Image (tube, rainbow, N blue to C red):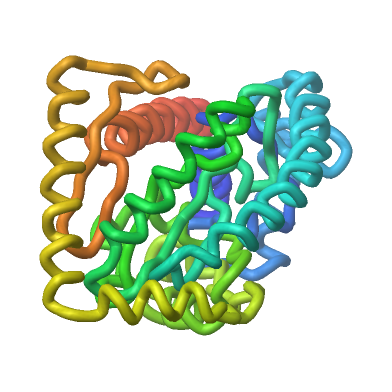
Length: 306
C-alpha cells in the first residue's frame, strides 16, 4: 500500500503547486508509476481515511480547503470559453507561411483559466523556416496590441519539423507534452507525439493520443509565399532573423525585463526551436515540487511509523 500512497501524494503534490485539485481519473493519468484502478482506489481510500489527503465530491487535494474546488470549477468554466477563442485564433494563425501545427499549452491545456490567463500556443513550423514564420507571426501580434487582444496570442514556444522531440525530459515537460491540445495540423502532431513517447517513463498511464487537430489546408497565398523563400535566400533570411531575435532577447534578459506575470524575459533558441529559458521558470517550479514531495513523504513516513 505504501508505494501507491507515495505515488498518489507525489501526483497531488505536483498539481498542488498550481492549487489544482484532481479527480480520481486525473490522478490515474498522472501517476508517476503504473498502477491499476483497483490499487489506486484502495490507496485513495486509505489516504482519505488517515486524513493525509481530502476529498470534496469528485476532487482530491492535499489541503482541507473546499474553496480550491470552487476555484477549479470556476476556472474550468472560464477555460471552456477561452478554448473556443483559441480554436478561432489557431485557425487564423495556421494560414501563416511555414506554420504546420498549432496547439494550446499552459494552464489552458489543463482546462483551467482565470481573469489573468493568456492563451499560450505551441507552434510547429516547417524545417529550417522557424524564424521566418515566427517573425511574421510576431509582427502580426503587434497589431493585436492596438485592440488589447495580445494576451490571446502568446506564441512563446516554437519547434520545427526537424526537431520534434523535446530535449528537456522531466515531470514538468512530460506533463506539458501530454496535456497539449492540438488545434491545427493533424499529421504533424501525430508525428510529434510519436517522437515524444519518452513521456511514458514519467507518466506511464497517460498514453499519448492521436492528434485531434484539424487537417491543414494550405491556401494559394501561403504556398506562394513559401515558394518565394524556398531557396538559399530564404535560408539566409531565416538565419539572419534568428540572429536578430536572439540579440534582442539577450538584451531584454540582461536588463532583467519582466513579462506580465513578473518573470524575467529570457529565451533559449537555436535553428530549430525557440522557447522560454528553462532556468527562469521550469527549473524553479521543479525545485518547488521536489521540496514539497520531500517534506510530504517525510511527514507521511514519520506518521505511519508511529
